[in-house]
Length: 364
Figure (tube, rainbow, N blue to C red):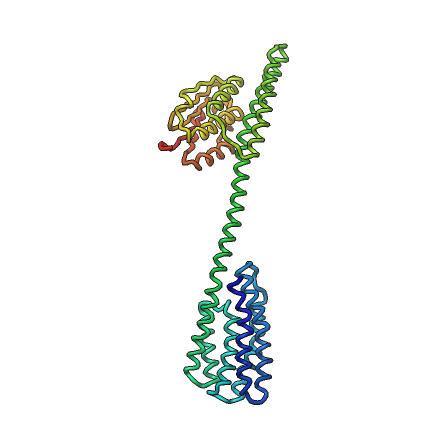
């Protein structure tokens, strides 16, 4: 704000000083008439200046600008007509009065005088100066003076515009960060809770069937359900705290256990050690989401998980028995997660096989 505060005393102070100096030699009622006319100009010009500065500093849209500018016309007309009618062309007091009035108009209207408007303002100032003084050089001085005032004013507003744009970028960046965090939480919640709920449903269904047959192992499966529920609760808490690291070895072990509990023969080809440290967590997310997808949507009998240094492939034969199976929200989120680290996700469907392929960058 320090760059624009001086413009208020400029708007009132400079015209007032020049008007006072000119009034010493001015004849008759010229000082009174010009003083009243000058105040009539300065009041709406002050409002225009303030609104324009607030627009640059606080993005508050100006109001009634045309009406306020129109309100300066009567005062300006009376002011300059009084000088013409008073005579005294070429005298110092007329020149001071002229400079005072033009300075007030230039400072007050400077915020809106850009481009063609600035050119028109310069020509208007030259015409007024020529009409009041009759001297061509006075017209040139008036036009140049108005141009300098406009240029200097906008040079002081430039830092404010830059700061306002930086503030807008900061606000947008904060909003984007919030949106990204919401997306992250939604995606991770789907991955974590979706998998465990599917596991709980399968284990509970198996335990119920065993209990119906009087099999004592039903209680063991229910204890597994309890363990999975506690694990899910712990994962959700970690998720809320932003801790999302998962282990590929544990995910492979858990995937095999869950799939085989659901009656799906599972084969793991390759070892977790083949995946680089940089890609290990992403590979674990691929295994988790692909497993969840199979449990929730497929009617698979066999599943093969292949791991090497460049990719993770999860294939199952459940597509033929599940005609509605297609990439869902979880796989879409997984693709976004992989894209963030430069990896890719491909989904392939043939007559009976649904395959998820995650490829990592070779130099990762």
